[in-house]
Image (cartoon, rainbow, N blue to C red):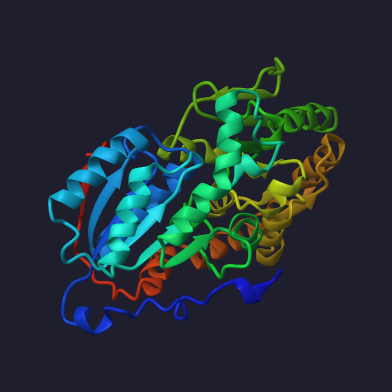
Length: 383
Protein backbone atom coordinates (compact mmCIF):
# COMPACT_ATOMS: atom_id res chain seq x y z
CA UNK A 1 0.00 0.00 0.00
CA UNK A 2 1.35 3.47 -0.91
CA UNK A 3 1.68 5.17 2.48
CA UNK A 4 3.44 8.18 0.91
CA UNK A 5 0.07 9.46 -0.32
CA UNK A 6 -1.56 9.32 3.09
CA UNK A 7 -1.15 12.65 4.82
CA UNK A 8 -0.40 12.64 8.55
CA UNK A 9 -2.94 14.72 10.38
CA UNK A 10 -0.40 17.39 11.32
CA UNK A 11 0.86 18.02 7.77
CA UNK A 12 -2.18 19.21 5.84
CA UNK A 13 -1.34 22.91 6.05
CA UNK A 14 -4.48 23.84 8.00
CA UNK A 15 -2.96 26.35 10.42
CA UNK A 16 -4.18 29.56 8.85
CA UNK A 17 -6.24 30.66 11.82
CA UNK A 18 -4.59 28.79 14.69
CA UNK A 19 -3.46 31.87 16.63
CA UNK A 20 -6.98 33.30 16.51
CA UNK A 21 -8.49 30.17 18.11
CA UNK A 22 -6.19 29.45 21.01
CA UNK A 23 -8.35 31.04 23.69
CA UNK A 24 -11.80 30.12 22.38
CA UNK A 25 -13.86 26.96 22.24
CA UNK A 26 -13.74 25.71 18.62
CA UNK A 27 -16.93 25.78 16.58
CA UNK A 28 -17.34 23.20 13.83
CA UNK A 29 -19.96 22.66 11.15
CA UNK A 30 -20.69 19.05 10.20
CA UNK A 31 -22.34 18.70 6.78
CA UNK A 32 -23.90 15.26 6.26
CA UNK A 33 -25.10 14.48 2.75
CA UNK A 34 -27.39 11.86 4.29
CA UNK A 35 -30.35 12.57 6.60
CA UNK A 36 -29.68 11.58 10.18
CA UNK A 37 -33.32 11.18 11.23
CA UNK A 38 -34.36 8.28 9.00
CA UNK A 39 -32.83 5.26 10.71
CA UNK A 40 -29.36 3.79 10.94
CA UNK A 41 -27.58 2.04 8.05
CA UNK A 42 -23.99 1.96 6.76
CA UNK A 43 -23.19 5.67 6.18
CA UNK A 44 -25.56 7.07 8.80
CA UNK A 45 -24.08 4.76 11.44
CA UNK A 46 -20.70 6.31 10.72
CA UNK A 47 -21.94 9.90 10.63
CA UNK A 48 -24.10 9.55 13.74
CA UNK A 49 -21.20 8.19 15.78
CA UNK A 50 -18.90 10.97 14.55
CA UNK A 51 -21.56 13.60 15.25
CA UNK A 52 -21.97 12.39 18.81
CA UNK A 53 -18.21 12.31 19.44
CA UNK A 54 -17.58 15.71 17.87
CA UNK A 55 -20.43 17.22 19.90
CA UNK A 56 -18.57 16.23 23.07
CA UNK A 57 -15.40 17.97 21.91
CA UNK A 58 -16.44 21.21 20.20
CA UNK A 59 -19.43 23.46 19.67
CA UNK A 60 -21.08 21.63 16.81
CA UNK A 61 -23.53 22.79 14.16
CA UNK A 62 -25.07 20.09 11.94
CA UNK A 63 -26.63 20.35 8.50
CA UNK A 64 -27.97 16.99 7.31
CA UNK A 65 -30.15 15.78 4.48
CA UNK A 66 -30.37 14.94 0.82
CA UNK A 67 -29.71 17.59 -1.83
CA UNK A 68 -33.02 19.45 -1.64
CA UNK A 69 -33.00 19.82 2.14
CA UNK A 70 -29.30 20.71 2.16
CA UNK A 71 -29.70 23.48 -0.40
CA UNK A 72 -32.20 25.30 1.80
CA UNK A 73 -30.28 24.65 5.04
CA UNK A 74 -26.95 25.81 3.59
CA UNK A 75 -28.52 28.98 2.19
CA UNK A 76 -30.11 29.78 5.56
CA UNK A 77 -26.83 29.12 7.33
CA UNK A 78 -24.84 31.40 5.03
CA UNK A 79 -27.37 34.24 4.83
CA UNK A 80 -28.00 33.96 8.56
CA UNK A 81 -24.39 35.00 9.18
CA UNK A 82 -23.43 31.72 10.86
CA UNK A 83 -20.20 31.44 8.91
CA UNK A 84 -18.86 34.25 11.10
CA UNK A 85 -16.79 32.75 13.89
CA UNK A 86 -16.81 29.28 12.38
CA UNK A 87 -13.48 27.48 12.91
CA UNK A 88 -13.85 24.57 10.52
CA UNK A 89 -16.15 22.45 8.35
CA UNK A 90 -16.22 18.67 8.11
CA UNK A 91 -18.15 17.20 5.16
CA UNK A 92 -19.39 13.60 4.93
CA UNK A 93 -20.16 13.05 1.26
CA UNK A 94 -22.72 10.57 -0.03
CA UNK A 95 -22.88 8.13 -2.93
CA UNK A 96 -25.04 10.71 -4.76
CA UNK A 97 -23.57 13.73 -6.52
CA UNK A 98 -23.12 16.95 -4.52
CA UNK A 99 -25.41 19.85 -5.36
CA UNK A 100 -24.26 23.13 -6.84
CA UNK A 101 -25.08 24.73 -3.46
CA UNK A 102 -22.60 22.42 -1.71
CA UNK A 103 -19.81 23.65 -3.99
CA UNK A 104 -20.79 27.32 -3.69
CA UNK A 105 -21.12 27.13 0.10
CA UNK A 106 -17.73 25.45 0.58
CA UNK A 107 -16.14 27.85 -1.89
CA UNK A 108 -17.49 30.76 0.16
CA UNK A 109 -16.10 29.19 3.32
CA UNK A 110 -12.67 28.93 1.72
CA UNK A 111 -12.83 32.61 0.70
CA UNK A 112 -13.46 33.37 4.38
CA UNK A 113 -10.39 31.26 5.26
CA UNK A 114 -12.43 28.58 7.04
CA UNK A 115 -10.65 25.22 6.68
CA UNK A 116 -12.70 22.43 5.07
CA UNK A 117 -12.10 18.69 5.39
CA UNK A 118 -14.19 16.54 3.02
CA UNK A 119 -14.55 12.77 3.42
CA UNK A 120 -15.15 10.68 0.27
CA UNK A 121 -16.94 7.57 1.50
CA UNK A 122 -17.30 5.54 -1.70
CA UNK A 123 -17.12 5.52 -5.47
CA UNK A 124 -19.79 3.07 -6.60
CA UNK A 125 -20.20 4.85 -9.93
CA UNK A 126 -16.69 3.80 -10.98
CA UNK A 127 -17.31 0.07 -10.50
CA UNK A 128 -19.79 -1.75 -12.80
CA UNK A 129 -20.27 -4.60 -10.33
CA UNK A 130 -21.88 -2.09 -7.94
CA UNK A 131 -23.40 0.47 -10.29
CA UNK A 132 -25.35 -0.28 -13.46
CA UNK A 133 -25.75 2.70 -15.77
CA UNK A 134 -28.95 1.31 -17.28
CA UNK A 135 -30.90 4.59 -17.51
CA UNK A 136 -29.93 8.02 -18.88
CA UNK A 137 -29.93 9.43 -15.36
CA UNK A 138 -27.65 6.72 -13.99
CA UNK A 139 -25.37 7.00 -17.03
CA UNK A 140 -25.08 10.73 -16.41
CA UNK A 141 -24.43 10.08 -12.72
CA UNK A 142 -21.54 7.77 -13.59
CA UNK A 143 -20.02 10.27 -16.01
CA UNK A 144 -20.42 13.19 -13.60
CA UNK A 145 -19.12 11.45 -10.49
CA UNK A 146 -15.40 12.12 -10.89
CA UNK A 147 -15.82 15.77 -11.97
CA UNK A 148 -18.19 16.33 -9.03
CA UNK A 149 -15.82 14.66 -6.54
CA UNK A 150 -12.92 16.71 -7.82
CA UNK A 151 -15.02 19.87 -7.55
CA UNK A 152 -15.48 19.01 -3.87
CA UNK A 153 -11.74 18.49 -3.66
CA UNK A 154 -11.09 21.92 -5.23
CA UNK A 155 -13.14 23.71 -2.53
CA UNK A 156 -11.68 21.64 0.34
CA UNK A 157 -8.52 22.38 2.26
CA UNK A 158 -7.93 18.66 2.83
CA UNK A 159 -9.52 15.40 1.74
CA UNK A 160 -10.13 12.19 3.64
CA UNK A 161 -11.08 8.63 2.67
CA UNK A 162 -11.51 5.25 4.38
CA UNK A 163 -8.66 3.65 2.43
CA UNK A 164 -5.79 4.74 0.23
CA UNK A 165 -7.06 2.61 -2.66
CA UNK A 166 -10.42 4.38 -2.69
CA UNK A 167 -8.73 7.78 -2.42
CA UNK A 168 -6.50 7.07 -5.42
CA UNK A 169 -9.47 5.85 -7.49
CA UNK A 170 -11.26 9.15 -6.92
CA UNK A 171 -8.58 11.76 -6.25
CA UNK A 172 -5.54 10.42 -8.07
CA UNK A 173 -2.28 11.44 -6.43
CA UNK A 174 -3.70 14.00 -4.00
CA UNK A 175 -2.58 13.41 -0.42
CA UNK A 176 -5.36 12.33 1.90
CA UNK A 177 -6.06 11.73 5.56
CA UNK A 178 -7.13 8.13 6.17
CA UNK A 179 -10.23 7.88 8.37
CA UNK A 180 -11.50 4.26 8.24
CA UNK A 181 -14.80 3.46 9.98
CA UNK A 182 -14.58 3.49 13.75
CA UNK A 183 -15.87 1.12 16.38
CA UNK A 184 -18.27 1.77 19.22
CA UNK A 185 -17.42 0.68 22.75
CA UNK A 186 -17.12 -3.10 23.17
CA UNK A 187 -20.33 -4.95 24.05
CA UNK A 188 -19.84 -7.44 26.87
CA UNK A 189 -22.39 -10.13 25.92
CA UNK A 190 -20.96 -13.68 26.18
CA UNK A 191 -22.46 -16.46 24.06
CA UNK A 192 -24.85 -18.93 25.65
CA UNK A 193 -23.68 -22.47 26.28
CA UNK A 194 -24.33 -24.43 23.10
CA UNK A 195 -24.73 -21.33 20.93
CA UNK A 196 -24.23 -22.08 17.22
CA UNK A 197 -25.44 -19.01 15.35
CA UNK A 198 -23.79 -16.82 12.73
CA UNK A 199 -24.71 -13.15 12.34
CA UNK A 200 -24.78 -11.20 9.07
CA UNK A 201 -25.76 -7.51 9.09
CA UNK A 202 -26.38 -5.50 5.93
CA UNK A 203 -27.93 -5.57 2.48
CA UNK A 204 -28.79 -9.20 1.76
CA UNK A 205 -30.32 -8.72 -1.69
CA UNK A 206 -27.28 -8.39 -3.96
CA UNK A 207 -24.38 -10.79 -4.38
CA UNK A 208 -21.84 -7.94 -4.22
CA UNK A 209 -22.60 -7.86 -0.48
CA UNK A 210 -22.21 -11.63 -0.23
CA UNK A 211 -25.46 -12.78 1.39
CA UNK A 212 -26.61 -15.16 -1.41
CA UNK A 213 -23.32 -17.08 -1.36
CA UNK A 214 -23.34 -17.05 2.44
CA UNK A 215 -26.80 -18.63 2.47
CA UNK A 216 -25.56 -21.33 0.10
CA UNK A 217 -22.49 -21.85 2.31
CA UNK A 218 -24.64 -22.25 5.43
CA UNK A 219 -26.79 -24.84 3.66
CA UNK A 220 -23.62 -26.79 2.83
CA UNK A 221 -22.21 -26.41 6.34
CA UNK A 222 -25.42 -27.65 7.97
CA UNK A 223 -24.82 -31.05 6.41
CA UNK A 224 -21.81 -31.27 8.78
CA UNK A 225 -23.33 -29.40 11.72
CA UNK A 226 -27.12 -29.34 11.64
CA UNK A 227 -27.66 -27.05 14.70
CA UNK A 228 -25.88 -24.23 12.84
CA UNK A 229 -28.07 -21.20 12.09
CA UNK A 230 -27.65 -17.92 10.22
CA UNK A 231 -29.43 -14.72 11.24
CA UNK A 232 -29.55 -11.99 8.61
CA UNK A 233 -30.30 -8.47 9.84
CA UNK A 234 -31.17 -5.99 7.09
CA UNK A 235 -33.27 -2.96 6.29
CA UNK A 236 -36.78 -3.42 4.85
CA UNK A 237 -36.47 -4.02 1.10
CA UNK A 238 -32.98 -5.49 1.39
CA UNK A 239 -34.05 -9.04 2.26
CA UNK A 240 -32.53 -11.94 0.25
CA UNK A 241 -34.55 -13.15 -2.73
CA UNK A 242 -34.42 -16.80 -1.62
CA UNK A 243 -34.31 -18.06 1.95
CA UNK A 244 -34.13 -21.77 2.89
CA UNK A 245 -36.87 -23.08 5.13
CA UNK A 246 -34.39 -24.33 7.73
CA UNK A 247 -31.34 -22.72 9.28
CA UNK A 248 -31.74 -19.14 8.04
CA UNK A 249 -33.91 -16.36 9.41
CA UNK A 250 -34.22 -12.76 8.25
CA UNK A 251 -35.17 -9.88 10.54
CA UNK A 252 -35.29 -6.08 10.39
CA UNK A 253 -33.46 -4.59 13.36
CA UNK A 254 -30.88 -1.98 14.33
CA UNK A 255 -28.82 -0.80 17.28
CA UNK A 256 -29.59 -2.49 20.60
CA UNK A 257 -31.99 -4.87 18.84
CA UNK A 258 -28.96 -6.45 17.15
CA UNK A 259 -27.06 -6.68 20.44
CA UNK A 260 -29.97 -8.64 21.87
CA UNK A 261 -29.22 -11.39 19.32
CA UNK A 262 -25.62 -11.89 20.47
CA UNK A 263 -26.12 -14.58 23.15
CA UNK A 264 -26.93 -17.11 20.42
CA UNK A 265 -24.07 -16.04 18.11
CA UNK A 266 -20.60 -17.58 17.92
CA UNK A 267 -19.30 -15.49 15.01
CA UNK A 268 -20.06 -12.60 12.67
CA UNK A 269 -19.66 -12.85 8.90
CA UNK A 270 -18.68 -10.70 5.92
CA UNK A 271 -18.92 -12.79 2.74
CA UNK A 272 -18.29 -10.22 0.02
CA UNK A 273 -16.86 -11.51 -3.28
CA UNK A 274 -13.44 -10.24 -4.28
CA UNK A 275 -13.55 -7.51 -6.89
CA UNK A 276 -11.87 -4.17 -7.51
CA UNK A 277 -14.23 -2.24 -5.24
CA UNK A 278 -14.49 -4.74 -2.40
CA UNK A 279 -10.70 -4.99 -2.26
CA UNK A 280 -10.36 -1.28 -1.47
CA UNK A 281 -13.56 -0.75 0.55
CA UNK A 282 -13.64 -0.80 4.34
CA UNK A 283 -17.15 -1.82 5.52
CA UNK A 284 -18.58 0.08 8.47
CA UNK A 285 -20.01 -3.19 9.81
CA UNK A 286 -16.51 -4.70 10.01
CA UNK A 287 -15.68 -2.35 12.89
CA UNK A 288 -19.13 -2.70 14.40
CA UNK A 289 -18.56 -6.45 14.47
CA UNK A 290 -15.33 -5.93 16.44
CA UNK A 291 -17.32 -4.34 19.27
CA UNK A 292 -19.57 -7.40 19.47
CA UNK A 293 -16.72 -9.53 20.79
CA UNK A 294 -17.22 -12.45 18.44
CA UNK A 295 -14.72 -14.03 16.03
CA UNK A 296 -15.09 -12.72 12.48
CA UNK A 297 -15.33 -14.94 9.41
CA UNK A 298 -14.49 -12.83 6.36
CA UNK A 299 -13.62 -13.37 2.73
CA UNK A 300 -10.20 -12.37 1.47
CA UNK A 301 -11.04 -8.87 0.21
CA UNK A 302 -7.82 -6.93 0.78
CA UNK A 303 -8.73 -4.24 3.33
CA UNK A 304 -11.21 -6.41 5.25
CA UNK A 305 -8.78 -9.31 5.52
CA UNK A 306 -5.99 -6.98 6.63
CA UNK A 307 -7.98 -5.71 9.62
CA UNK A 308 -8.92 -9.23 10.77
CA UNK A 309 -5.45 -10.71 10.29
CA UNK A 310 -3.67 -7.82 12.02
CA UNK A 311 -6.06 -8.07 14.97
CA UNK A 312 -5.92 -11.88 15.10
CA UNK A 313 -9.68 -11.93 15.63
CA UNK A 314 -11.01 -14.41 13.09
CA UNK A 315 -10.69 -16.50 9.96
CA UNK A 316 -10.10 -15.37 6.36
CA UNK A 317 -11.39 -17.60 3.56
CA UNK A 318 -11.72 -17.59 -0.20
CA UNK A 319 -14.89 -15.97 -1.57
CA UNK A 320 -16.54 -19.08 -3.04
CA UNK A 321 -19.56 -20.64 -1.32
CA UNK A 322 -17.62 -23.89 -0.88
CA UNK A 323 -14.69 -22.11 0.81
CA UNK A 324 -17.03 -20.10 3.04
CA UNK A 325 -18.76 -23.34 4.04
CA UNK A 326 -15.39 -24.85 4.99
CA UNK A 327 -14.61 -21.75 7.04
CA UNK A 328 -17.96 -22.05 8.82
CA UNK A 329 -17.30 -25.69 9.68
CA UNK A 330 -13.85 -24.72 10.97
CA UNK A 331 -15.31 -21.91 13.07
CA UNK A 332 -17.91 -24.23 14.61
CA UNK A 333 -15.19 -26.81 15.33
CA UNK A 334 -12.93 -24.35 17.19
CA UNK A 335 -13.09 -24.93 20.97
CA UNK A 336 -15.14 -22.27 22.79
CA UNK A 337 -12.10 -21.02 24.71
CA UNK A 338 -10.24 -20.42 21.42
CA UNK A 339 -13.23 -18.55 20.02
CA UNK A 340 -13.26 -16.47 23.20
CA UNK A 341 -9.64 -15.49 22.61
CA UNK A 342 -10.58 -14.32 19.12
CA UNK A 343 -13.52 -12.41 20.56
CA UNK A 344 -11.24 -10.75 23.11
CA UNK A 345 -8.90 -9.77 20.28
CA UNK A 346 -11.87 -8.24 18.46
CA UNK A 347 -12.67 -6.17 21.56
CA UNK A 348 -9.06 -4.93 21.74
CA UNK A 349 -9.22 -3.93 18.08
CA UNK A 350 -12.50 -2.09 18.74
CA UNK A 351 -10.84 -0.06 21.50
CA UNK A 352 -7.92 0.78 19.22
CA UNK A 353 -10.28 1.96 16.47
CA UNK A 354 -12.84 3.92 18.47
CA UNK A 355 -15.06 6.65 17.05
CA UNK A 356 -13.42 8.97 19.58
CA UNK A 357 -10.08 8.49 17.86
CA UNK A 358 -11.68 9.15 14.46
CA UNK A 359 -13.21 12.40 15.76
CA UNK A 360 -9.84 13.42 17.19
CA UNK A 361 -8.27 12.84 13.76
CA UNK A 362 -10.83 15.17 12.17
CA UNK A 363 -10.16 17.91 14.70
CA UNK A 364 -6.39 17.50 14.45
CA UNK A 365 -6.57 17.78 10.67
CA UNK A 366 -8.55 21.01 11.00
CA UNK A 367 -6.16 22.16 13.75
CA UNK A 368 -8.96 22.44 16.30
CA UNK A 369 -8.34 21.74 19.95
CA UNK A 370 -11.06 19.49 21.40
CA UNK A 371 -13.06 20.56 24.42
CA UNK A 372 -15.88 18.73 26.20
CA UNK A 373 -19.40 19.28 27.41
CA UNK A 374 -21.03 20.69 24.29
CA UNK A 375 -24.03 19.36 22.36
CA UNK A 376 -25.03 19.59 18.72
CA UNK A 377 -27.21 22.28 17.23
CA UNK A 378 -28.75 20.79 14.09
CA UNK A 379 -29.92 22.59 10.97
CA UNK A 380 -31.75 21.16 7.97
CA UNK A 381 -33.77 17.98 7.67
CA UNK A 382 -32.37 16.32 10.78
CA UNK A 383 -33.71 19.00 13.10
